[in-house]
Image (cartoon, rainbow, N blue to C red; front, side, top):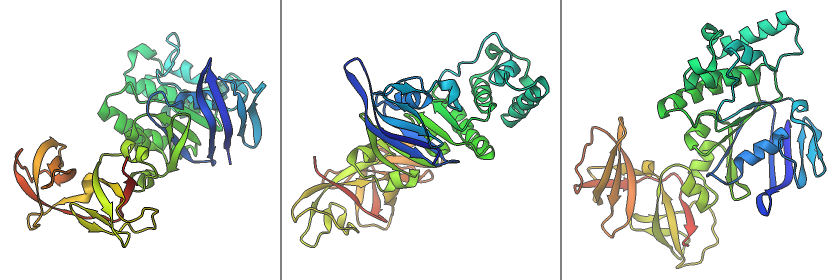
Length: 346
């Protein structure tokens, strides 16, 4: 295990930011801390990096304790690389000089060779003599990544690295960054509020809420098997449709009666909310069940329809874009669930 964060507590003045926070990361894994603004994500990185002392708990890297109450190993002694939200490139240094900044212990030939390797890795070798202000946001991000990787850190920390980029660029760059980290066998933690960034880069995602982790798993697990209503709301798109628990444990919805597929604690008659994703609701002209189109959003290959059911419930459906239906039109639908996710009604 490369990183072990155990029971960490940290706060500013009278405000607690982390409380009994724990996280582990194996070597070679790309992890992600995903959560809304203000939940403490960046504070976690700052504690791991050694920029912040901790009030309780411990942090260990490669089995060596680097933080505990009263002791904080300085950042420069932790073998950690950092990519900041604003890139933090030195404006008076060229691209090559920025990448070389953390390589002062290498002799000149070795330093130049490593800079060349890193610039080639991120596709920036042709702009080595330019200055940061002459680069686009995506180019600056690549240089920041090269600079962080150049000293061969044991762990790379990335704090909202794509937040200043437009949507198309951040999706493309996210895929490229994952490939770069994979080629270097780099262990990394990404912090972001954007699930698309998390899905594009991370092997393992921890959903953070109010001082601690709410659920941890792969993107698929978090999307299809959320453990709490917060995770179900935060990950992906979906709606909740009211239902009632029957005597045999199945759940009755406006769309029919369905088996939960796993034991649950709810007695007969318990009102529940069932999570339905847009890919659970299929457009089917032959279906006897019809729903009214309330809203439509064109997504290129598909429309995302918001539909009203006969008894007033609302669901969303992702439909191939050659099915172009008008607002107010009624279309046939059917529910296709691999597994049913339900929560006691709040």
